[in-house]
Length: 552
Image 1 (tube, rainbow, N blue to C red):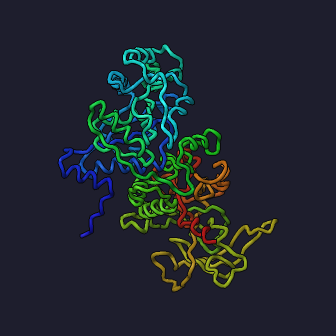
Image 2: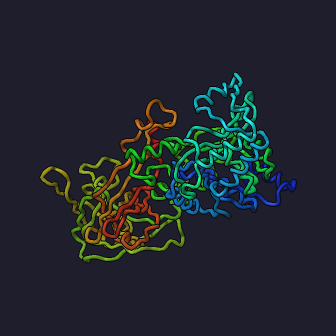
Image 3: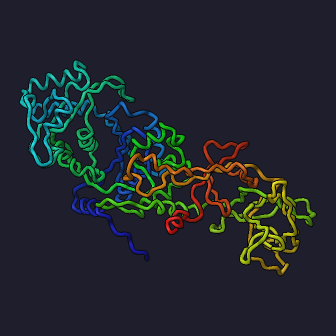
């Protein structure tokens, strides 16, 4: 009997809460702002929130924090929903902070009526100065002493659009001497004339995140609100708002966000990569976005496995990108169909093959007992890999060269007899003879060879384009590297191979299938691919090439 996995600290909290009868069931939420595409860091939060609900028999809301309309678009909303579902999760309720705009406005009115909020005419710069520093208390201004009636009148006028953007804000009235800077009369509302993707122009004032967050959680009766560590200083304000308004006592808990080598997690910087043309789009397969990883061929299972392996901690750390690649590689090895593709072709002619052509069989996946076989056409003219041939073979060279024998994968043993060069001196054609009694699966030749080559029948081969993707950045800690992060973009992050020939099975394979191109890596059909122009993206190499580079 396998030992049950130990609980992380958030799971322990939930387990205790349920054991004590604090809640009958738990309700979590995943609250992205629709101002960009989700990345692998969000995947960790998605897996955590939905995973907690699944483990403890609860549910999860998907709530869009759409309180900053200038940066938010329906495109991002749609992409976020697609990403969450692709990862394998379903939400019990789809919510938007904008659903609560009227309710949040009324909450702000209640705080004003209790003398806990006021309208401030100060500029952003003046407010920053008035807040003081971590070692010196803030100072109040004349606006802080406005009467309740004046504040109610001004706040209503703000809502009605009677003031210019930035002319006034609504601030909480808490403690200007608090050691926690977040409690020094934080902003609750600002004036912002910007068309909202859901409410249109109905509002010209919008709640700040810190006000919308806690109150939205309480409205939805979220039991465990999971945030990243940077929100620890915000928790007292979260609790203050809920307490002062007498709302459902949602509780905030924090965990370490995902930081990963060779990767940028800032949506602002990712947007910069897209808008400045350093990548083709948000779903460029080099991007750490979920949509980019999906297009590249990563599987939902491998991403969930990665998030499970890195765990949930209270302390920031940086995860090696190789772990994610390991998870992808491990899953693809189990499910990927094997196919033969030659990327740098050289012609091989079997001079004594007189059958014209025949259909051989080859296993789809040796790791899958039920993977079955596929038909592979064979003829006397083949494409083989150029680097599988050497004019003057070295002592321990076990591939093809004058006088050497190799096995052709799932086919016959051949012996190289001679070769020809073109006018430039490059090997153009290899001539070989085959042993008819050496057919794979029924070999009676008694021959033993050490090398096995993949190949494609030249008469049946289909052209394919391979996008060989690598890491987008060339330094480990790009987030903290000196200077402009774009200076560290890997110039070799994409190599496009246009000379590749593949076995014809790929013409009929489903577009969502994963492949291992033998000895080349794992590949996935790109969204731009068609039957007349097959394009495949390299998901991951067969081995961790970067680990080898680090040892040099």
